[in-house]
Amino acid sequence: MEEGKKEINLDSILESLGPYGRYNILNFVLLLFPVLLSSFFECGFIFEAREVDYRCEIPICEGISDFNDTSWTNFSIPFNHEKNKLESCVRYAPIDEANERCSADAFYMNKTVPCKSFVYGESNTLVKEFNLGCEESKRTLVGTIHSTGMFAAMVFTGAISDRFGRKVAIGLASIASFIFGMSRAFSPNYWVYIAMHFFEAGFGGGLYPSAYVLGVELVGLKQRVIVSAICNMTFVVGEVIIALLALFVDNWRTYILILYSPAIIVGVYVWFMNESARWLLSKGRKEEAIKILKSAAKINNLDPRKLDLDALGDPLLRPQNQTVDKQSQLSKALRSSIIWKRLLICSFLWITCSLVYYGLSINSTSLLPTNNRYVNFMLVVLVEIPAYIIVVVVIDKYGRKRTLMACYVTCAVTSLLFAFLPRYSVWSQRTGGPLPFT
Image 1 (cartoon, rainbow, N blue to C red):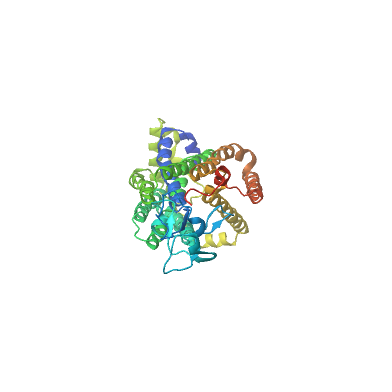
Image 2 (spheres, one colour):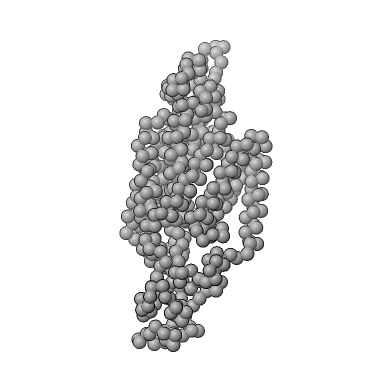
């Protein structure tokens, strides 16, 4: 750099380009689509592997009377008064198994036996097709496997993003989501389904963070909070779409195909997008970064010469003739008490946030006093939008620490209040009886 020439920081150039210019808006739209899809992939299993009502099948009694007449269940299957429905996993033992009859005097009313087969309340569901009656651990394992895959994705997604670029990480994640997600829809059995679920989450779980990082790096420091809020609100919109889709598509295989087919669109167009100028600078590829910034200036109807891009520098970059001992830098980082303190605190906060967020989302179908699981889910996720708007307003005024403390305390108090709420059975309060399925 010529002596006396001022070095210009990338953030000042991004401010000059304008956060709401045509270049940024176009890229935001292209990046918000994978953010939207990531909500499908991260939360779609909530309805895909949803809880289904079922009861014991009593072969001798099934179909002997009108379809809606199930009075024979009074003497063949115990009634759970606490849950206000028939028992799911046991039935009354027949007195004479060899000559079983469907009558009140043919069953022991004080003796039960495990169910051998089941009648399911909903057709075309994963639970019914894989016959997961009374195997609740297998149904909930879906969420566990998904979370495990997401954890695995976080391990190497950052490495791919830092080494090969943001758009490479987005492209690989979207293609992996498409391949393994679509394959899951054709799973012949439960264990193949679980394996595809892990691979899809493991190889495609980095879609959101990769798109988020590229979106944030398009703007300067002042606009990052707004961009973050927009990404989060887009995620919420995706969750609402999931609930609406599940409401109208009852076949779990069709549901998966609809959710994952758009991923191939991202897997194609992302390769035509520009890479992050910030990432290119961090890799010493200054000429490529300048070329992208000049293109952005032209799209925004700005004169690239006024930006003085040749003076572009970054405080994180080393001079061309200076080498850095990476092992020495890593050693310094590992010995830094400040880094360890922040790492441990932020890790704990993130784990806590994930537990509460996904815990509420997964159980949203039974948290609210309505008998519509889809409405419940939408109401629980829609309350996030006002929160994101409030964060944009308060975070710069009160800072990160105060905002975090206020949010966590509020969440803790309101979550604890759930323990003191009375049991509420919507159907029983409206009808005074068990579900019509039973």
